[in-house]
Length: 358
Ligand code: F6P
Image 1 (cartoon, rainbow, N blue to C red):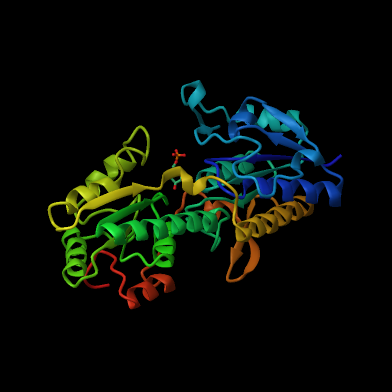
Image 2: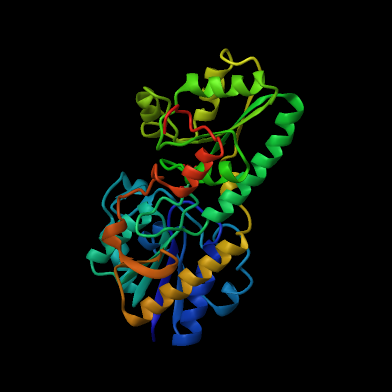
């Protein structure tokens, strides 16, 4: 019979279960397929940690956060951390062949798509589904999980707003997003943040302080700053490289939000506080929008599997659904352009991006 494996690569993300459900149900209902769940991302493929998924297993999971399959963002078959970073891709291929899989659906971000691309070149029939709260995958205008992360961050900033107002404080809110500013831009704009700092625009700390102080002096006695975790002060490239790339625990040490608060504290008269939103942005139930995006992506991936359209990732472009070659997505990051319509609108309504002229 037709047998398809599913794995969720990289970190967890709201909507993963909705995709698993859509892929599995579509393939079961339309193609009488057998579905094999692979545990903990590529780790399960390398170590043959798998289990058949029955219809009941994928029933009732649409709204659930996390992934029923488990995740591992360290398990790369081409450099496997559990075996001294050896290339164990042959073992992954052995599992795939040993299970008699006709194909494998890999749900993940840029790292997962890079691995998937290389495994496809070794002969696996792969269809990718674009997952990440960061929204930074090339080839698709949207990834599932982003809308949920933006809603959570927006809600958090709305709450920060009322406490900032009460205490006349400068409140720094650090969002996730890795090297891209999508979450900070969207949540910051949605909650009316006064300053939004994103990796795509190096910020000038003097300008940030000036905006805070001008607000204070003119009687608007609080300021909300949304800062993406990958944001960089002008001239601060080294610090960021150390913080992001050389850190043993990438991005989680200290945080740029704390660094900014520290830099602001002697430059403004208001008290300054920082909130790092962290993994709360990835947890819990997906929004209605993400549930539907996940269901559409999943049903499409199932159809591509059945039609033999392998080596591709499902995608959303210019309001329609399509697919792109995995090779186009591998090892790339989609960042916020300076001509981004939301960024331009935020500028138009007076939001500062930490630079005088933009
Ligand atoms: O890619 C999703 C993401 O949450 C990023 O926004 C963040 O930089 C990173 O993952 C955190 O990874 P970890 O799960 O290792 O803490």
